[in-house]
Image (cartoon, rainbow, N blue to C red):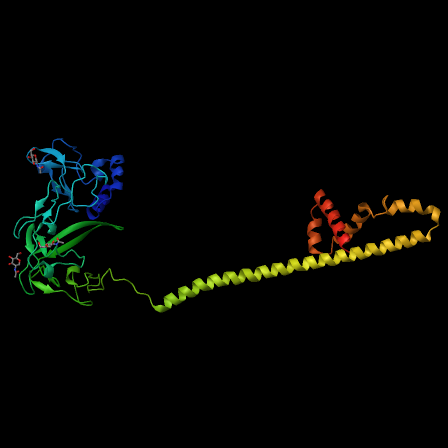
Length: 376
Ligand SMILES: *[C@@H]1O[C@H](CO)[C@@H](O)[C@H](O)[C@H]1NC(C)=O
Ligand SMILES: *[C@@H]1O[C@H](CO)[C@@H](O)[C@H](O)[C@H]1NC(C)=O
Ligand SMILES: *[C@@H]1O[C@H](CO)[C@@H](O)[C@H](O)[C@H]1NC(C)=O
């Protein structure tokens, strides 16, 4: 099962060489678009065929060789039709050349051959094997729909020019391809003819008819100038038509982008301003507390001094030792308990710090007190 979609992919796309390693890790015969016989191995041209459903060319030989009909041996390929053919690296020395203008590389990829005149045999869907008409500029399809190549087509394996005008008899060929979609396999019938541009070869009457405009009844894509016959049975707009959105969509998207950007910025600004205010309030409170403590201390000191002075002179030394250090400065030990007790409730900042029972807290507090004390 796995091999089939991959085979199709390799038919539709010039399979890049980077997929080549997969052919080594997976069963080669299933994946590559060729047989397994290597160079100089025996092969039979009788086995060469187009694969069912995909119409991919298959031979006994592997992806870098072809089966030579005279020797019945696989031989390195003599030309390529893809820029990046399957089974080669771009640096490969045996990468065969692409054919020049006026030549083509057949499905076997054995050797370049000159273009074929009208009525000669060509390979399925290989419009590029046929010689261009003198008025190729007028007939050539440049829409990318693959109606012809340079004005020539290969219909029912015969080269012809796509020069039939409206009402002329034409040749039509229907090829049912197996398509592998998301919902499984289905058949896609591709119908081609030798009518001029703007006409299609009607399968019933085998006459060239004008392509239909959007909204006209249709039974196949080829009948519509847009190449899109919808399931409702009318010609729809081309599947490759770009979708244009209204101006309002751009306006809404732009508003969404800028609204989101500025909304986020303003939201963050307001949030940070609020946080800053809270922090500032805490600091102001802290400053007020410290100021109050300082005043308390000054008052205490004044009171103590007053009481000491009031005492008789001989008892002074013992009273001193309780409140003052040896040099007469107020000791940290006497200060800290008062601060700690008073501060616990007041400011958010202090409250936050008092939750921390580490020794660093005590040190820090002592330092701060000293600093605050110095400032006043
Ligand atoms: C096939 O082999 C014969 C004999 O070796 C050789 O002359 C001929 O050129 C080969 N064909 C191609 C297409 O290379
Ligand atoms: C189309 O055919 C003309 C005449 O043969 C030729 O000069 C021209 O190169 C061809 N164009 C392409 C794209 O092959
Ligand atoms: C149309 O093409 C065919 C070959 O397919 C050619 O024989 C014939 O002369 C062409 N007719 C015109 C009018 O060019």
